[in-house]
Length: 330
Image (tube, rainbow, N blue to C red):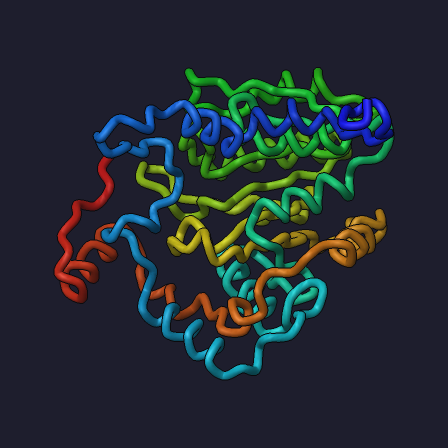
């Protein structure tokens, strides 16, 4: 048939149809598509996942002014270096080093388009034929979707609700084999909100070392804690096992639309370089896009670091913006 499809030899990757359906965006788009467009009632977006549209959640004016100045200067309309401009990488290295027993170098930092691209990069690097990766259950669905698109086998380990959603490390050891390349941990947890203790994180590091695998630490919700456990970055244990830390400015600073994230190698022993992981990360970044230059150039996280806890944040918000909210309570 002249107007049919028989004459065309085009084939699509049908795997994308199934993998994208399990992502957060895939589920949300399905839900949005089922809304009754004739219903006059406003939609209540409890699954929004983005605080920035609400007027009570806004980043500091200092950051907003810095971005405006960068755009108006016309100095930052060019492509940035493949792994980010030097001042921005140095700012992130300095910021993350505050919580570590060693000092990160700017060479440990790779800037990405949000944390999502950081996930894409590290999974692409590790997706060798026959390899598998260990993911938490429950966890962030994007890891599974991206791994499937890369034909990287996924093996799930369970989180124990009776122990504060800690990782069942015995099941991790049982799942791993000679083709296992890494374990993903999400701390603070998504979706369960768990904040792992120093002791549990150390056990994770020791288990990963025993198995000879990397730890990918998704810390996009770093320092957003409201219980008794303080946030401890997995990089603290970088001398025990190589750690790939993933993060962004999206959640803590309420600017997910600015699309700036990072992949950081916490590896004072230099194991990742010896294994060729660093070279592969840079090779992967050569084939991808970069975060906006004008966002990077004014990145100075120290401007946002004068708030020590949620109570102090509430006090400053009341004083400076006349907005009254209660600190988080357990």
